Image 1 (spheres, rainbow, N blue to C red):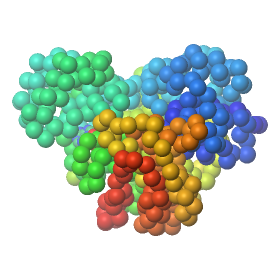
Image 2 (cartoon, rainbow, N blue to C red):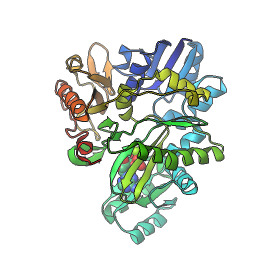
Image 3 (cartoon, rainbow, N blue to C red):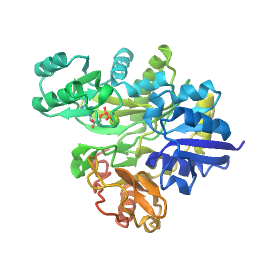
Image 4 (cartoon, helix red, strand yellow):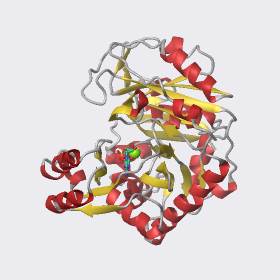
Length: 426
Ligand SMILES: Nc1ncnc2c1ncn2[C@@H]1O[C@H](COP(=O)(O)OP(=O)(O)O)[C@@H](O)[C@H]1O
Ligand SMILES: [Mg+2]
């Protein structure tokens, strides 16, 4: 049966979701709220903010939306899934209680301890003086995290004690992350490569997506400040099928079981971020939604109709579906505004997207763009240039060839996306 679908959010992830859903033979009308300068080319943008839960419920009821897909974390933490379900509206994503696995790092750490999921050793603090005493006792390197949602800026990886002191005072005394910093997690520093695991969950079972790798720091060689993510590859060759299976059994399964045991059954997309340490994989955090930019690589490789997958997750019938992927690799290079992740200009005219998409296999997903009379920048991460090929090297070459054709004042991107994976032995 044809379905009208509403996607909530405005980033590259949402453009990728819209791009893929638009290909479904069962798609009826496709809407994105609020969307961006790319989503309006494959769907209809609706000027309702992602956090306007009442507005979104009303829109879904009025427009006979058969399925709503939540992109970002904040509507989940506000209880959008609970609100939709209360009205009998189908929605892909976890309830507010289940989404706490992302929106409260303290909750996630306690849950991991109880479920015996491997993670960095930690302590949780409500008081600054106690946290300060602990970091002095423990020493550096050490990691200080605001527990709540902090726009990706609440984590301080501290090489020195002085940095940890600054982190604690910013979070707990200056309240720079507002009440996201009411609770603070102080944890052991972990060394190793990071990978992103994604699992579709229907509340009973789960299916893993291929492993992906994001690149968080702004500059080549993993230097500089952390960002929302500057580029991804999928799959990651050195993560074998056996390793992936182990992550499923030792990380995803016990987490879902413990959530269910606590009356917080999880449906939607569970995304643990892992660090591959010398003593095995450890969970850095859980996200309760699709990764961005991971999704921009994943959806280039997904063969199965995404609408079928999302619906089986919502309906609890995921076990009946076979999910298929194209062979080969996908890469995504994020192009960001000058100055990002700090202050940056908006409204900068943008050229070269059509030319970039003429490079073989390339699709450009929009993140921070708007389209009125012309295409302009409107955010920190502006575009995700994605490409596919039989080999990772070729996919990367194509993405970079296309990235060179994009032009706007101040633009920046990393030149070493995927480089680590190319040189890691497997
Ligand atoms: N214990 C840790 N040891 C080393 N690096 C860490 C640790 N925890 C987090 N990081 C780094 O900080 C980044 C952000 O941390 P994360 O917990 O994923 O928070 P968020 O994505 O909510 O900002 C991680 O991707 C990782 O690079
Ligand atoms: Mg993270």
